[in-house]
Amino acid sequence: MDSEFVNLSVVSWAVSNTCGNILATRRTDHDPSQANRQEQVYLIQEVAVSELRRDPVIGRWVIIAPERALRPDEIDAPKHARQPGPCVFCSGQESRDPTEIYAVRAYGTAPNTPGWQVRVLPNKYPVLRIEGRLVREGVGMFDMMTGVGAHEVIVETPDHDVELADLPEPHICQVLYTYRERMNDLGGDNRFKYVLIFKNQGHQAGATLSHTHSQLIATPVTPKRVKEELVGTQRYYEFKRRCVFCDIIKQETRLTPERLVLQNDHFVVISPFAARVPYETWIIPKLHNCDFVSLTEAQCGGLAHALKQTLLKLRTAFDDPPLNYLIHTAPFRRPRAGYWATIQHDFHWHVEVIPRLTRPAGFEEGSGFYINPVPPEDAAAELRAVTLT
Ligand SMILES: [Zn+2]
Ligand SMILES: [Zn+2]
Ligand SMILES: [Zn+2]
Image 1 (cartoon, helix red, strand yellow):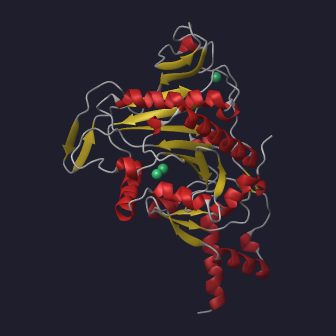
Image 2 (spheres, helix red, strand yellow):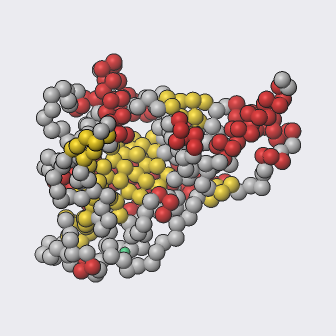
Image 3 (tube, protein in one colour):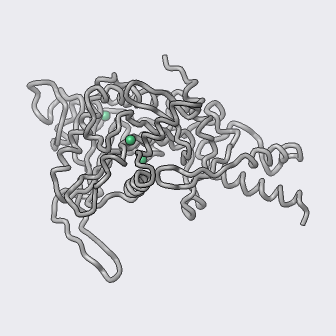
């Protein structure tokens, strides 16, 4: 078979499988199908530097397939139009949703009135409902249980026109304390095994309302992604007697810190070695603890700083990209034989920030592999270089 023909086929496969997933528009008229021979050789060279990387926590493989048109100044991140206020989350609109679960508010102000800084409401369209008994049943070979859980909205500010990253750090601390408070409270309900706190920012990241907010969902089972991390960290600990995240912090902050985005006294921010998507970023506490509920006052300031800087850097680099962040923490440790023996030593809570510049396609869905066109080292360098005024 003609070797040149084989090479060009490989180019075509790789280009369609990386570029095909990119939500962002390339600012170039370059068309690979029309490329002349010189350009094709150039593409072959790019493809040749692709590599497979294994995530040290859960063992997931990703393909890092560098794509030269995915530097921040060369792409247009998908834009999300802000809906104008006031909305149901705005100050002065409390009577439209008088079901306040919790609020950080000025002394002497009544629930469901103005005067709050952070406010928690039940989700109007919950995926799981708080009422009801948890009933498990088998239907033939299938397992089911009743849709019991909690689905809450954390409104981060009464101001309609700002994002979380615009808030002063002490206010972001109040949001983080609210997360901690709600986790603590829901942990008292024996029906729940886990609370996932997450944020959808921008329409393409799943946000349906512009007013900045986060969400939590308490579930009667441990989510699969969390379980994968629990199993992975436990295996690593059994083998090495060390926490994998503590090892990641050590490795990424000494020798050649090429994936380090920033650090402060309490947190490191890195582009993970096997990042799934361009500019995926992890925020990891330097102090080992498996549980977000352990967050101290000093740590809260550090997390507010790290989170704000990360979000501002992404916003500056990509002109306000859609993104998600989520907190991975230990499940509620109800007494259970054979469980939790080493979790305090092997698991390490953290925040994952996931910009939505690409979307998974058939290959990811079918294989569980992710294709990431931006090497994490390049992403970290770009984010380090963003200066904030
Ligand atoms: Zn609003
Ligand atoms: Zn650790
Ligand atoms: Zn995680």
